Length: 66
Image (cartoon, rainbow, N blue to C red; front, side, top):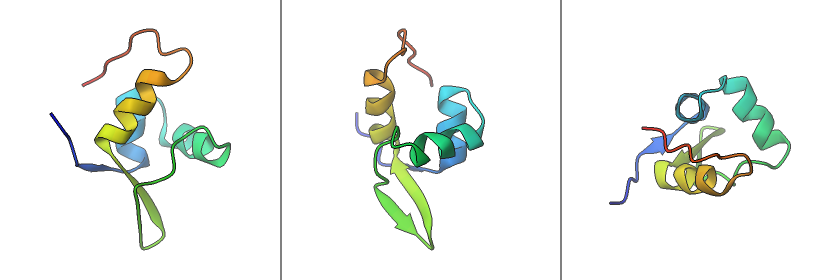
């Protein structure tokens, strides 16, 4: 199933159980995929983009999240 819902830093943070500031830091350091959309200067990612990123990131340890 495809999930085309857009996630902000807050939704990503909740998904991977960290603070939004941590997700911002990941982006700053090139550890987060490029945003799928930037609207009014704010980045957004499709849920599928983030789930794929989570699945392949080092230290994943099988986290599947909601």
